[in-house]
Length: 364
Image (cartoon, rainbow, N blue to C red; front, side):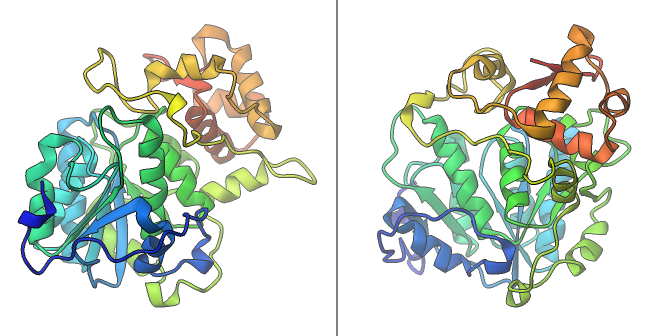
């Protein structure tokens, strides 16, 4: 998509300065979206104006959803748009794109945060979707100067930018080893409200969202639950009030050793040595996916485990190849179920835990 072909009233770029991006700020200090983009400077290209709705909510999830999860993502995007919320997502295959389509179908604007320039839409098959976002008064934001095979770090940086632009995050479905859970951890560190779209009738429940729910993250079984959840979130004008720690954050804080904090798994470093993503490779699931997880565990730059992360992983390792479900694992580790679930999220992001076919968690 060439930005010059878009509607004449769209704005290509914002004349942004070249200041480097800062780390994700806490919810108590979050600036307006345009200020965020100014801090990212010439590292991003922006097509179209940021929507004027009071709140922006990210809807994210797996690239490989079931049909029901895909329908749930569309319904979530549509329900948010009908409530006057700007839907923001990464534009990836699966949940991200479905949420954006739902918002557009409901007549609302949407924002797609892309891993490279909007003039080089990624994935290419979503070019019509991005053009429709622009036509409906939404916004396309992409990283600059990326061409050829997509470097893995571009997705990590895209997620970091997306989290800075929104007021809350909803996860429809997520695998254990996924960029979605990386974004969840970033959102939790920033103090953003989190929610999981879990529902009892889902024939293919997502292990990531299940763990989020076990850790105390709010569950939204039905689209009708969105209004009450939104009512509990401060508006952008009130976002400077001190943010209360989320259930996930409280579970992690409660597990920290005396005099220190549990170390959270470090995100991928933004360098090209991380390799590139080949979406055609057999068995590929995600840029943080399950196939590279075994490699990640053995990699020299994997962050060592500390505190309760290390304890839970050691206890899980005692179960051997059979692994353990959450209940016996939390009992063996002598910690609250919600705490064990929150720590499993950490270990999953770090590539130190996988899930077997029977749903048990296995240390690796």
